[in-house]
Each structure stands twice: as C-alpha cells, then as structure tokens.
Length: 151
Image 1 (cartoon, rainbow, N blue to C red):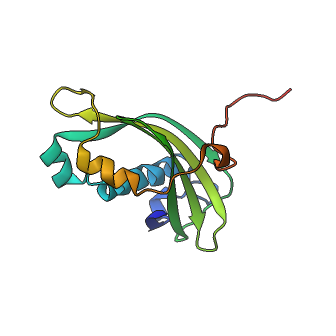
Image 2: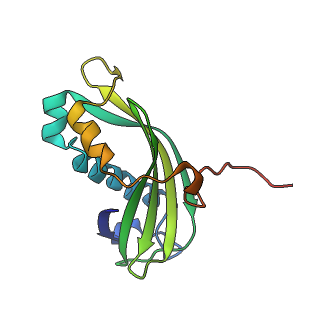
C-alpha cells in the first residue's frame, strides 16, 4: 500500500549529485507521519486520544541512487504487531517501480500525558487491522536483516 508520494527536493541532493543518505531517512520519516495520519493519529487524533507513536529502531538499506526532482513513493507493509507496537517494512521506489531503499522499523505507541508505552486506542487498532500484513513465512526479502561482515 503506497502511503506517501513525493519528489527529491533540491536541498536533499548532495555533492555526489544524488539524494544524501540522511534524506532517505527523512522520506521514511515523512512516510511514518502519513501512516500515522492513515491510522487516525493525525494532529486531531493525537489530541483526541492523547496518544502518539515513537520510533524505537530503524534499519535502512540503500539500493539505488535518487536524483533531484525524481518522483518517489513509499509503500508500507505490516510485519507484526501487538497491543502497543508495530513492526513495519517500508519500500522507497521510483516512478518505474525500481527499489531505491528500504526501512524496517519498530514503532511504539505512547500515552502523551505519561510519556509511557500504552496500548493503541480501539479506533487505531481497527485502522491498523486494515494495513497490508505480510505472512510470517512470506516477509519481504530485505526484512529481518542484520548488519555484519559475512565471513
């Protein structure tokens, strides 16, 4: 499910002539904001529920360069969830469907008043249930990776 459509902004381009590595993280962050909006945690939803989402961990994989003005889209797949966490996989693609980068993230639902983890509000749970979810045996090939030097 495509959650965000954007373009490579001129200020995102570095001295190599393509999108700076930090800007990939920005695009994935914008996609998470779009995901929050989609599940009812836009500004009004955060205010109504006194609830938000924090990112606990991120794993970025860079696959291809992106250039100034290039159209981008980010698709989201839910890998797993429990009462207060979401494990999501985001794919950044160009207009031709080429995979540019991926971001696997662990997100935590937070009560804004206490600043502590808290179960998702019922309305948000319903919206989360509508997200595309990967079967445990059919995760995207780049999900669940670890960093290390292979020997």
